Image 1 (spheres, rainbow, N blue to C red):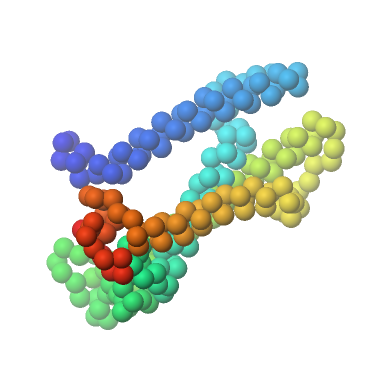
Image 2: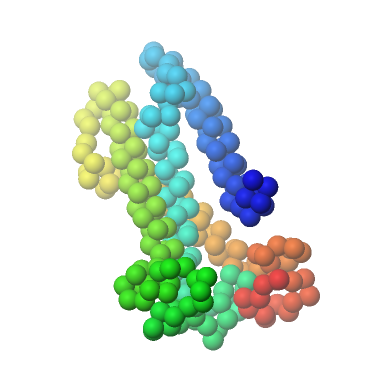
Length: 223
């Protein structure tokens, strides 16, 4: 167990933080939901019921989809695009799909992943598996966000005795895209600042930083 905790410390640390913040979001979100319900002379709901509500699903999925979009765009962009001096960029000579590719015959060291050694379609899929999985998560969370937000919109329409609309009609509404673009712009800003800040700034001991004495122009250097 100690070895498992040591070998998976980063994932477990952020996994625990994720669970704790989900619990916190559910508890405070339920209070906000119930306060609003009581103001409109509606019944309050339990935390358990709130976990399955469109209100909670919208809040969660709205953030998840923007995070996975960040990963997808960053992974793809850094294949070909270059930022001199940034730890988030490959060296100029390594730009493109060639760096880290499997040999044509699929040969690999004995301990390499099976699909990296098999060659053919399976190796090609494995060569792009990271961005493919991130893309699946993005599409799923975007769909979850849009459907839950659509249900919330129709619920508010019904409360005001206004007409409800279909899902595809809702996707054309400015309310949906305002919330979506608000999330996306923050993710792209974070990526841009991380790329340029690692050129000039340092954090001793972090793999997300160049070594302290490393020149600003050194690109893609790790500790």
